[in-house]
Image (cartoon, rainbow, N blue to C red; front, side, top):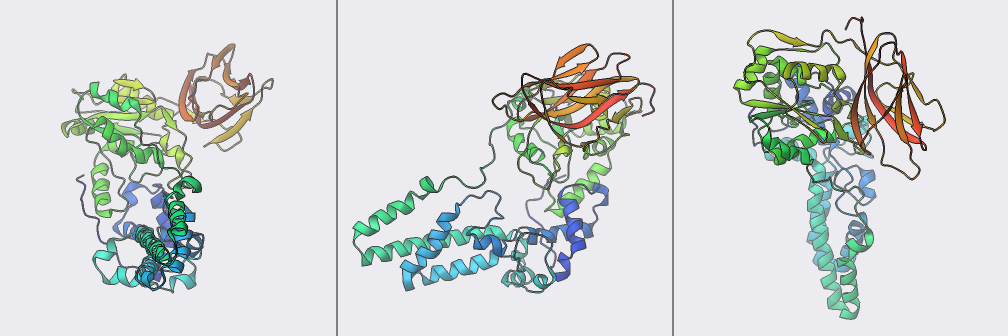
Length: 479
């Protein structure tokens, strides 16, 4: 779908726009768990409107001296406090205009309604206490596009900087430079003694594997899992990594642009391969797509399907704990291998499949024939947090009768002193568990005939481990 350059105007807001029911519904859209076909215009408008409150500054955060909603945390709070209190005190009347501007912009960062803290949804009394932002949003057409009030805090900080400069100038007029000079140096050296911001900026490096796509067959990219809303940082970086591979790509990430999202919904819904790719990490089998739709995508200029066999651990979350949405389950890998053959690139956690030039015009590909089941480990089967100790039996994996393959995602934290290694014991075989520290790694192992259980054990020291999507294929079991 063609991306529009203009953000659509916001719908009108009122106290009813921020009810608890609408808040819960907006959160399911934010984490991308609502089926794409269920995104009606009304639901998209409701979620669109909710962004205004989500991105407003609460009184609690403002009292701490910062516009804490800002995800970059780019201005350390001591600077804000020094300028907010020291500037007006020294500037006197000369700083009054800047003080008024600061107060006005700061009030606008609070959004349309008063929020004591950042805990949603709004209490009833708050939703009936409109602020100046509310009137400007509903009355000024261009202002209705300012859906992130906290960003107005940048203007507040600019005014605070000017206010501090006016205060310093006023101080230099009244005192000797012997006093004003050291004060000026102390203010300019502030970044050196306040320390780094609370949250570091994102890593701007691209995975080196993307550069190797230059040797892959031509064509636009479909990167899996395909989401209409980037629920995780890894998925949000797909678009950024386009700077490395420089190919057109099917991408949405436009929940804030409901017109583009509607076009994306209509486009994806017409193609079974794209429907299969949509939210594949959280979708359950059976899967399927037709060869006619593969050929249609090829005719439209698509050439590659990108997948990931290794993903960095995410310490920050965009929409709650949705990290498992990035990790494809084994039936999906089996389908991709069966349909498109060996990958044209399999390096450093990136795997690329080429859409065939001579795809048939009839027939379909399904996940039938592979009986993968989730293992019942008596813990949370989505993500397990474990510490295995040496000289113990470790973690038992009940494979069951007829087990032929084991598949799982494993994460080893960054190695600590004395950290041991992990070994998978399958029958008489002892298989090292190769993982990249700090990254989720997909592992698949063949199970010898007659083996009904396996064990994960630690050797050489305690071993920390997280597991996800632990599955086993069993012969003779209906998929």
